[in-house]
Image (cartoon, rainbow, N blue to C red; front, side, top):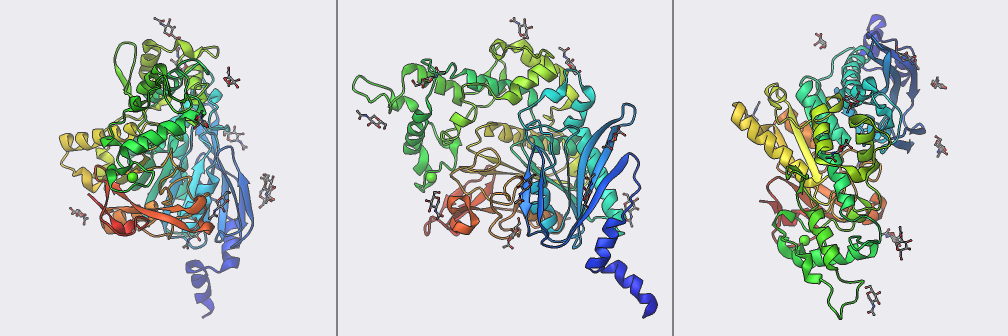
Length: 526
Ligand SMILES: *[C@@H]1O[C@H](CO)[C@@H](O)[C@H](O)[C@H]1NC(C)=O
Ligand SMILES: *[C@@H]1O[C@H](CO)[C@@H](O)[C@H](O)[C@H]1NC(C)=O
Ligand SMILES: *[C@@H]1O[C@H](CO)[C@@H](O)[C@H](O)[C@H]1NC(C)=O
Ligand SMILES: *[C@@H]1O[C@H](CO)[C@@H](O)[C@H](O)[C@H]1NC(C)=O
Ligand SMILES: *[C@@H]1O[C@H](CO)[C@@H](O)[C@H](O)[C@H]1NC(C)=O
Ligand SMILES: *[C@@H]1O[C@H](CO)[C@@H](O)[C@H](O)[C@H]1NC(C)=O
Ligand SMILES: *[C@@H]1O[C@H](CO)[C@@H](O)[C@H](O)[C@H]1NC(C)=O
Ligand SMILES: *[C@@H]1O[C@H](CO)[C@@H](O)[C@H](O)[C@H]1NC(C)=O
Ligand SMILES: *[C@@H]1O[C@H](CO)[C@@H](O)[C@H](O)[C@H]1NC(C)=O
Ligand SMILES: *[C@@H]1O[C@H](CO)[C@@H](O)[C@H](O)[C@H]1NC(C)=O
Ligand SMILES: *[C@@H]1O[C@H](CO)[C@@H](O)[C@H](O)[C@H]1NC(C)=O
Ligand SMILES: [Ca+2]
């Protein structure tokens, strides 16, 4: 009995033992320096914020929080700030989270709610600098160390460190390594799969900002399509709901349910010219010829001045989000900063002068190798890696066409260059009525990155939670043929469920079979 005690403590430590384990933890990893360690008891008040995300909660299980300074370039002394959270009740898996825009901060809400609370060792990094999403000034100009940290280095080194820290903390290795993120985080995930195929076993990514050199000029182009404000090209905020109503009139019922959501915009041939202004029209409810031309450009493929294809356009159905997305008075700062601080290195650059050679320069320079357009995930797939991608059809910041193109490119490349069946490794779920990563009129709560701080999925299991679905697919090989997304009333879980919908793997769509339109059970993926 006497000498069994330490063994028992080691295998199933009580709360006291975990606290002790945490506060005395002295990991040894080259270039990783522990800044601070804090043990949080179960249901302790946790209130943390970074330029990226905030978490304020008292509902977390007990965990040990490590604050780390990771040297990313020993030659120059460049470092990144990262955190790793180790829950007492570890599920033996690690789960990393990514960033958004140019930020610049630890993803606290994801680490807490999608990570530690679900039993994962959870981690994230500031990507080597502190800063808010739209601010790209850390790029220098010519701040190469910071650019490379942002592009991939900080997350890769944090991932390697987190696995080793978990092993040293618990005394055994993780079973599987996961990653989940959206937007810039989606780009980071693709970079990891293509450049560091050993980093993760399962990756869940939303609407990736992967094609940086194409995305950035496109967002500038979108706002130039309507600028300047109050010109004949401009579409005032009050006109967008009118355009949306007309899009719904033409296409809402094509999916069998008239619910304010166009489930498959790919089959919607939207003709806004049906509300062209006539002599007798109320000008608050119709479109002028110049405004129709603005819409045509916003919804079209973007070709540069030399007629090269650059990026896909908006799709019908997202009109309530476009005036606060890119059809705006000023272009997205993320994109103007891309040229000022990363490509042209000219902080006085005027976005009106954007031209084909500047776009090409971005592609050629590819600062920090941050572009992640590669369709080659074969090394990741060959070691059993799986990826679930998702995108909102109403994405107002990155055309959903980008996600679909990348999915198709990877699919075709894999078939052409390997014996791997892409269906066993890669699925894309389109989300009707969801904007960029979160919010929108559709059912958009399914446990993905940046969603849980609004509301949790209906249940934390593989039916409702995309990360749990990934775990099941990877670890039991049960195919994910759909995921159930939830729309809460007022997007608030405490207000109750408004409706649920199946999200289907592309190119399938949820098809109404009759019965309660608010229940996912009335739909099948076809
Ligand atoms: C380290 O964490 C403790 C709580 O465990 C806190 O009181 C202290 O201020 C932190 N120190 C630094 C330098 O952040
Ligand atoms: C959380 O911390 C912030 C400062 O970071 C503070 O302003 C806020 O009042 C705190 N929230 C609560 C509920 O204590
Ligand atoms: C982080 O590490 C870098 C590189 O070793 C060092 O220069 C810097 O002072 C460290 N920062 C902190 C807060 O310890
Ligand atoms: C699911 O996890 C969330 C944390 O994101 C938690 O708030 C919620 O209570 C859990 N749901 C259920 C049904 O246990
Ligand atoms: C701008 O700076 C980046 C980072 O140092 C560099 O890669 C790029 O070539 C520079 N651009 C030009 C036009 O010199
Ligand atoms: C744990 O992982 C490390 C690093 O990958 C490896 O060297 C070691 O053999 C593993 N230990 C066990 C028990 O599998
Ligand atoms: C555009 O027109 C509106 C309505 O007349 C006016 O309030 C606003 O100041 C104008 N904006 C600009 C930038 O001219
Ligand atoms: C014109 O349309 C606007 C917006 O629908 C409405 O508020 C206004 O009353 C209409 N004006 C007339 C004269 O019908
Ligand atoms: C295109 O833009 C670049 C960068 O602003 C500028 O240097 C160049 O002169 C422009 N080319 C033409 C043909 O206007
Ligand atoms: C996983 O499922 C796929 C498709 O059903 C099958 O082809 C494959 O052999 C399975 N792999 C394993 C390891 O069971
Ligand atoms: C939703 O929010 C609105 C406005 O805040 C409020 O009037 C309404 O009662 C809320 N509905 C529910 C079901 O909570
Ligand atoms: Ca519909």
